[in-house]
Image (cartoon, rainbow, N blue to C red):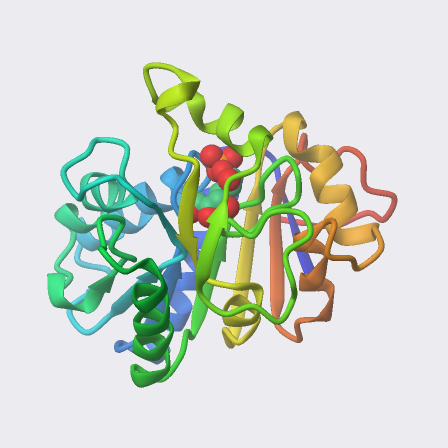
Length: 248
Ligand code: F6R
């Protein structure tokens, strides 16, 4: 595992953007795995700004998102489709047909999972997956106890995950109870992974991710087994680590 220690959120986001930019220059038709949530917002802003300065093109890029709530339509302000469109896709020159997010309104969620997984295979897999981390160690919506051998599947969201995400909804009861997520196997098949974490709230999760036992009870720990992972942290998120990380 490579680690970069950034001063703050801004620098963490800039480092992640730099890594993606390098890969995009090498392979303009890169397939990017993307995450939602607060963590990658700064990264998306940086990538948008590079595009606006004509330093980057997304013309040939394909994207696959990690997850989507079941029961929320594309137009719902809390759907991950809406999040990606508002915070990233509408600002860049990506072909909408090249962007993929599970359909939260599907009538057949099992079939949707199967098709999503097949779609990822058919476009040649994920070159670079961006991840955040949940306080309980989830990646995507793979909650504690998830099998490392899972492909895209339906999950019951953990109470703590629904609580953490309730800030975006009128009330906790409005947070969906189920989601479709790429599985840990799908994520681990990505050729490269970058995981971003910032803030003291994430420090214990980061410690377990990097220095804890590899166990299903803490899904992010599986990343210790991936051959090409880069963990990009700000100082607060790195504050409980025993080992000194590479400073930016
Ligand atoms: C989002 C996702 C989640 C988040 C995690 C952290 O698509 O799959 O695993 O990365 O919940 O969320 P934030 O960044 O809001 O702390």
